[in-house]
Length: 180
Image (tube, rainbow, N blue to C red; front, top):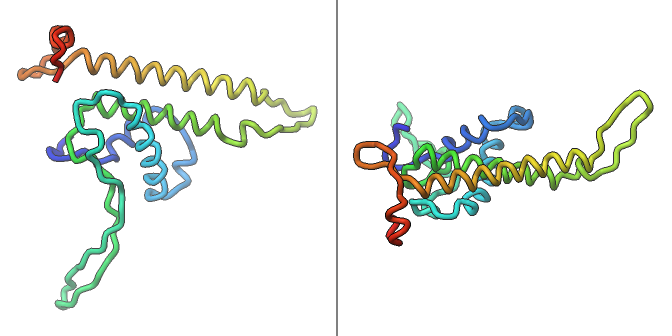
């Protein structure tokens, strides 16, 4: 990460997209995709229990009108899309935790999909697995990601990088009640 004042949401989106394959995101344009991903991220933020940063310190994507000066000296107003960002710098570990919880939210959407609950009929030439079996497997996967997110948060809280960049246990400060 080269940005020293903020973390664009796109960093978390990239980590999330590397964890799953969904052709739907390939069919949408970038703005639509980022809109859907932002919804997942905002839901995932609530699952990050004890971050070391102000989790509410972010700006959602929005449109902004800017004035551009043309070569002939005239000006024109143009509407641009400003991407969402955290107004602090996140570590790779924090990005991974958020991306993991985005997967949990995405799997929750898959479970809530009408396609999983609608009865499907097939001819003798077609074989469908049962929706209940399919949903049970998605639910198991969702629970696995929830456990993974919880595990990542435990590791995150139990260690901290020192001034030399070496990971150190926070056990002493946890036991004394002065975790920073």
